[in-house]
Each structure stands twice: as C-alpha cells, then as structure tokens.
Length: 469
Image 1 (cartoon, helix red, strand yellow):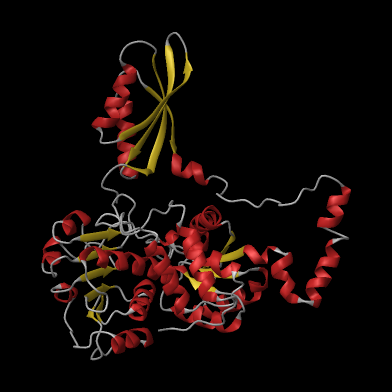
Image 2: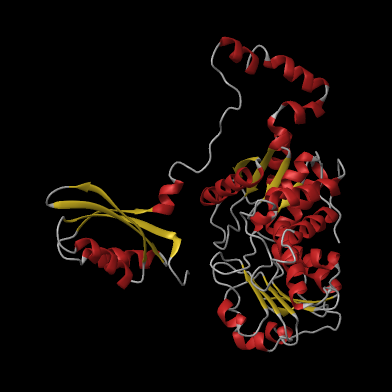
C-alpha cells in the first residue's frame, strides 16, 4: 500500500460548480483535507451560472480515492458527474500495437511486401535458414512468455490477468531498446506443455523472455528450453533482478569502502530471484553468504531440501548457522531481501555491522521500512519508485536483449550477466556516486546502450548455452 499519494492511484473527477463564489478554491481544499494531492484543475465548460471542472488528483489507494470523491461531493452546490481512474484509462484497448514498417500505398508495394514477391524471400530463407535473422523481424523480436503463476506480487492470477503486465513489458522493450516484443500468455501451468509450446514458436523470435513463472518450475522450464532452442532464453525475474542487484551492491560497497569478497551477506528469499541473485553474487566473488527462507536459514542439516535448496546449502553458510533471519542479520554487512513484507524492523538493522547496506526489495511493501532502515544503515535501496536507489529490472533486460540480438547470440552465459552488471554499475560516475545514488535512473540515456555493448562484447558474436556458477 502506498504511504503517500501516488500517480498509480490518480483519478479525474468531473464536477459542476457555481460560476461565482469560492467553489473552485473549495475543491482544492477538499482534496487536500482528504489527504490527496491536486495535480491538475481544468475548466472544460464555462457558462454564466455553472462551470464544468475536471479535478485530477493523486491518492494513496482505491479506498483513499473514494474518500477524496466523497469529500468533493460534500462541497456545497457541487454536483459530481463522472470519476475516471487514469491508470485504467491508460490500459483501455491495450498499451501496444503492431505497425507496418513499409508503405502499402499501391499494387507494386503490395506485390513486393506480400504475394507474389514475398515468395522469393521465403525460398531464400528455405535455402539458408540463417537468413531469417536478416530478412525478417526475427532479428529484433522477443517473446515475453508467462503462465500467470507469479505475477508481480499478486500471485497466481492466471494468463488473462497477466496480459496487462506483459503488455507493459513489451512497451518497455520498445521504449528503452527499440525491440519488438510480443506478449505470449499461456493457458497452462504444466511445465512440459510450456516447454513444448515455447519450443514450437521459437523460430519466429530472436529471444525468449520468461516472465512471472513461479519457482521451482521456472528453473526447470528455463533449463530445458536452453537445451532445445537456438535463441537466448532469459528469465527476467531471475537474471534481470540479479544483474541490477549486483550492480547496485557493487556501487554501495564502494560508498562504504568494503569489498564483496570480505563482507558478510544475509539474503532473504530462496525462490527464483533469490537463487539467481545468489548465483551471480558468488560468481562475482562473494564468499560469506547466509540464505534464509520462511523456515529460517538454509543449511545442509535441514531435511526439507529440494534440489535448488540443496545447491544453496552446499554453496553458502559454511558455519552451518541454523536459526532464524533476525539472527542471520546480526553482524552482517549486507542484507538483501527478495521475499516478503515487514519481516524485519529497524531494531534488527541496528544489529548489523557499521556502514551496513540494506536492499529491501519486496514490493510494494519492503521487508523493512526504508525510513527505519535509514536510521541505522549507510545505504538503503528498495524496489519502490518513491525512495532513492530503486532496484528496477528495466535497468537490465532491455540492454541485455539488445546486446544478445545484435550479437545474434543463441544463448546466455554467466559472463554476459556479469558484464551487464559491471556496465550498469559503471554508468554511475565516481562524482555522482553516493548513499542515495548507487544505480542510475531508468531514464538515464546511457543505461541500455552501456549494458547492450557489454553483453554484445561478451557474446563475441555467438554464444551457446548457459553456464551456471
């Protein structure tokens, strides 16, 4: 839940008020008294006796938005005509569309773009399948694939409800990297069926972005697809998160003058994101990590370890710590949370080492209040846009896929992910680096290009498969 008014809960209220008197100013006061923020006030129709006014304001959540509308309705001689949710208006009819890159103004152009001219291009590809990357959209296209089982922080809400998120993802690909991405929402959560469907559609794409598929199935699906298809398969919830976390931690440790190989890290969350973050941190040189899930620390003495947890136990927690998260945080230099809201307090952060780094990334409510964490930690990051140091996957995945597509890579390697993280960290110059600026803005013009160049160079043309740590 938002703690302050947010544009995510922005509404426009159309009202009719008397043309004279203090009605207009009373509207502004009514919104402010209800705890909202007026962002625009437009007169849409004016007469001698009545004015029609659109009041646009930000609220904390849907209940707060309704409270603001109720308060506006209490203003004397005000009639409410219509209330519009601006977020829903943005989504009406979907957020993306397909457009032709070539004109189709006459018969000649139609004959070249389609039959009979297109047959020559099809036969050229049939003779040399590699030409598909040169002569079709394959060279610049990504399939954004989900089964709707782990959508944002909303859980298993299904493929139809996942579509607005996948549309948004496709829009981000286009905006930040010029990539044409297509939402593919599958009405199955069977791993075998997902693998077969994605394998079958892969000829039409240059890359596969798996999205919002729950763990542990996501690990199996990604692994099997990497073995079956000749294009990169990237699970953004895993690898995109890991890239941005490593980049942010690289710069945070520079701020507090500590080395990754020497710090003690406590990681909350052993799902898709947590496991990927852990693997990349270890590949980058981290040596002392304790991972906790909802049952406490992951260690080799636990009798409930599946394959993924067993790998974690074998590669972390060398001293065999077996208690809860709060005990694991005590004396740590770094806390990284990709788990659940409100599981720590400011008092817990106070038990960490001096100049602590806290990444509380659960969204929308972090593992610990950022304000409370700031009282004790030197650097704090969240997944939220209303605090400094937002850890946002859009810093990674557009540039990663731009580099993969440009290199015509047929796989993703751990070195590519490390190269992407190093490049992202380097976008923040030494002069800019500070406790409140360890990662660049998602709108920084150099982000996608720097990440793409690093991935492209690491790919060296073509890369096959994916090498885990």
